[in-house]
Structure formats: structure tokens, C-alpha cells
Image (tube, rainbow, N blue to C red; front, side, top):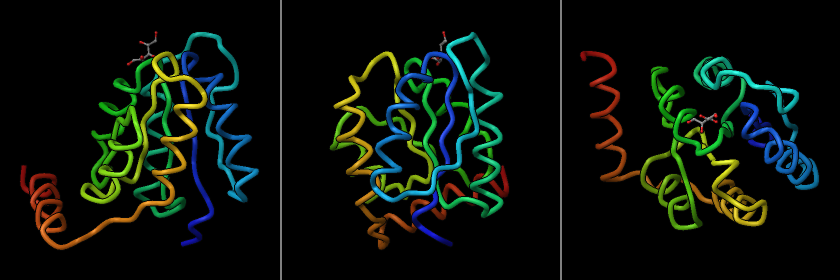
Length: 150
Ligand code: RB5
């Protein structure tokens, strides 16, 4: 799949940061699939987390970004979808680890907890880093087993 495609979605609290990050991604030559929302009018974050998560697990987009006020609601909702590893990141270290160790396929950000500059730095690291495999793969396989068998 084309690694230069990325999905993005937010609720009202994440909308301004979503718009800011979209501009950056376009400048970085990403094709951005924006799944809403489209204003700061109040909406419910699961309605935006689920469609984006499904696009990732269906293989239509390789990875995505979800933004709400804190990023917490988006991460809880997205992680209900089998195959999703949504990571709430708040600095460059958590962004790096979420890729190196957890192979996160969705980045969750807090629109009310991060400055645009902080979010930019987190996103940049998250996009550049890769999964390290090895012992970390064994652990992810155990999570997949929980998803399969309960
Ligand atoms: C909306 O007010 C807020 O609860 C939501 O954006 C998010 O932070 C939930 O986790």
C-alpha cells in the first residue's frame, strides 16, 4: 500500500488541529483522506474514530490520525476495532516508541492538550519511525490472540 496516503479525522475539539496538520501533511507530499468532522460544532468522537479505524483494517489506508480534546476518547474507540493499535502520544518519545515497539497504526492526539508545534513534532517522528519487530512482534501476536480468542 502507498505509504504516502494517510487518513485523518477529529471531533469538534480536534478540528482546528486537524486542519493545521492536514496542511503540513500536504506540504510533506502526503495524500490526505479527511473523514471529518468539518467544523467546531459539537459531534461525538466514536462516529469519527470508527470509520477511520475500519478503513485501516480494511487496507484502504495504511495508517491514520485521530484527534479529540485529549486524544483519550479517540484512542478508546479506535482500539475497539480488531487489528487497530491506536496510540495516544504526547511527546516525541511516546511517538517513537509507539512505532518502534507497538507498531501503532493510528496516532491519537489531544487538540486541547498540545500546541500545534508539539503536535507537528510528534507527527513528524511518528511518520518517520518504523516497527522494530523481534520481541515486540511476539508481544503484538499475543494481543492478536486476545482479539481472536478473547
Ligand atoms: C469533547 O468535549 C471531549 O470530551 C472529547 O473531545 C475528548 O476529549 C474525549 O476524550
